[in-house]
Amino acid sequence: MLFTCRPLAGHFEPLLLLAREAAAAGHAVAFATGEPYATRAKAAGFEAFVAGPDEGFRAEWAPRFPGFEDLVGNEQRHFFLTEIFANLELVPRAHDLESIVDSWSPHLLVHEVAELAAPLVGSARGIPYVDVSYGALIDSSLLHATGEAASPHWRARGLAPHPQAGLFRHLYVDTCPPSLQNPEIASLAPVQLLRPAAAHVPDVDPPDWLDRIDAAATVYLTMGTVWNRNLDIFRTVIEAVRDEDLALIITVGRQNDPAALGPQPHNVFVHQYIPQGVLLSRCDAIVTHGGAGTTLGALAFGVPLLVLPQGADQYANADRVVAAGAGRQLLKHELSAAAARDALLALLHDRSYRRAAERIKTEIRDMPDPLEAIRRIEGLWRHDKA
Image 1 (tube, helix red, strand yellow):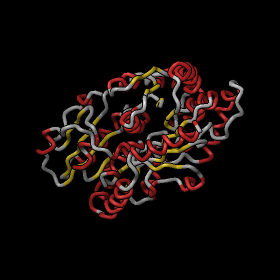
Image 2 (cartoon, rainbow, N blue to C red):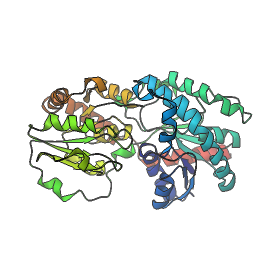
Image 3 (cartoon, rainbow, N blue to C red):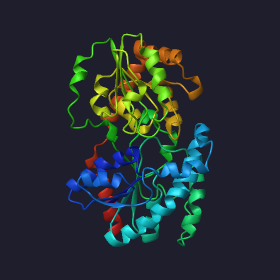
Image 4 (tube, rainbow, N blue to C red):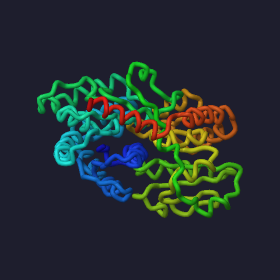
């Protein structure tokens, strides 16, 4: 099985548990992705090939699209799916993936849904492939726009374009709990549910200072690994809780320096990175950008969210969290210290948010584990072989 993904944590992590389970079941497993995730796959014990742009590719294309960060909701998601995923990234990744497939000869491709080279190369080489979600199903209107954007690359290989860029032809592995899912999921078949990777607690000891926190409530703030460049967001939330009986734990990301936020009050703890799985069980609320991994991770522990969406799928995730009653959201123009304080205090004092988050926690707990998903994936290969 060849696993392939965009070179970002939120795209790599959903595949890692499946890859480990596949290897444990006796399959030969390799990864094809950009750096640094090809190296991280090797560090996790897998054979790995470099395929497509690396993590820093955004810095190359961003100057060509001024104003894309000002797009909101589906407008920005449309931009990423069509201009970036189905065009700029697909072209070099498909070129690399074709060479890897021809030399390594996988029986199956397993890709996350934003990585659109696997359906193209799999179709061209006659190899079945599995689509793995990292959140709710993408709206059909966006998927059809993605298929249209990818169509020239299908025609270039002598293939009839697929209306959804090749997705959902074989098996869709769905990591989204029902309360957050797009109702359009009912139109798909076949679908295999899978407990999201963010629900699994990492085998890492929590930092000692966590046990010394003495506050009425603990709040965790993260803006993920990509959308964390605006340090003013961190400053605003710090100001919001400065005088409250709250402990605020902040991770600013590996590319940021905690010292850049300056000295902090006694109830604010700023670090570069801590695995969220060791924090969430101790938290009463989380403030986040709304990436799928962070959102599902919080809800897997029954923690309500204040979502500050910045781009990509975060607006849709925020809307689904609010609709499920498990949190609140503040858009960019709505964020202030006063608004963040009011929203956080509501999450902490109105038990309905916690009850909704606990309900989704139960849904996530009841989703199948990676072994069941691998058995379903094995069936796809056996059926194709037959």
